[in-house]
Structures are given as C-alpha cells and as structure tokens.
Length: 70
Ligand code: SF4
Ligand code: SF4
Image 1: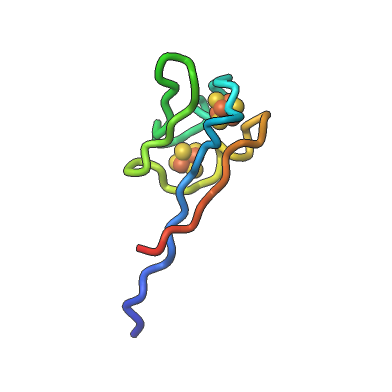
Image 2: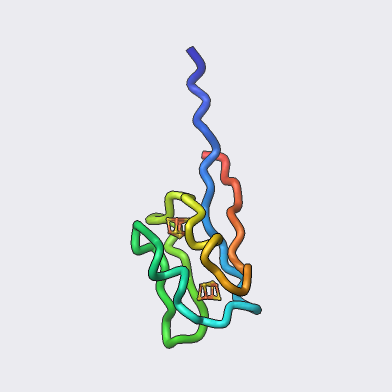
C-alpha cells in the first residue's frame, strides 16, 4: 500500500487586490480568515482545509488555491 499523502490545498489571498469586503470570511467553515485592521484578508494556513468556498465567494477573484506537498 502506498504511504504517499495527498497534496493539500490552501487558500492564498492576493494582498495587492483584496478589497477587504469580508465575503470570504463569512463563508469559511473553519474560521480561517481574518481581516486585520480592515486592510486585507489573511488566511491562517494551519486552519485552512482548502475547501475553496472563499475563492468561489470572493467578488474580486483574488483568492487562489495553491497545492502544497505534505
Ligand atoms: S479554502 Fe475553505 S477553509 Fe480555507 S480559507 Fe477558504 S473557505 Fe476557509
Ligand atoms: S472576499 Fe476577496 S476581496 Fe473580499 S475580503 Fe475576501 S479576499 Fe478580499
């Protein structure tokens, strides 16, 4: 049996184009997103499970899901 783990996906926000609307924060099932000082969304990589809900919800399309080898 293979012991290779599946690659994990994590949400990444483009801090240059995020408009801090908070839409992503509201839909995250893990409460992994915060908007410190209302400037830009930040994803806690330890909490994010890569479900992609935030990326679908973002009106500015600035969230991408990046693959991480674990
Ligand atoms: S991918 Fe899912 S768990 Fe990760 S920040 Fe977005 S909504 Fe939250
Ligand atoms: S939904 Fe998009 S634009 Fe709005 S706070 Fe989240 S990352 Fe920024």
